Length: 73
Figure (cartoon, rainbow, N blue to C red):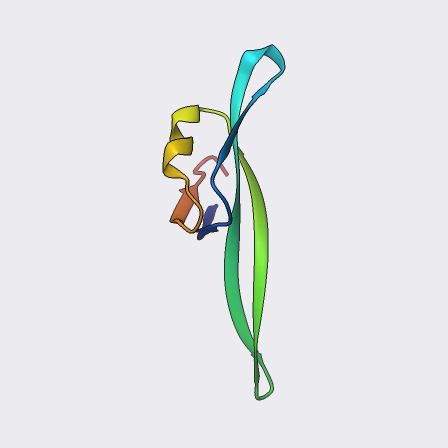
């Protein structure tokens, strides 16, 4: 699986049960298609949670272009 898009806001680090940290952020994916002579745009928002390293939050800033992959899928 691969998700590529722009961040809608700066990432937020939260502390959850057991003092674990999670980084939350939302990615906007833009797509377009034609319906007859009309071009239509579709925007999909993907809410993400990253559990491995909260230090990544400093790089996840609003408007940044990013790509995330998960090779376990």
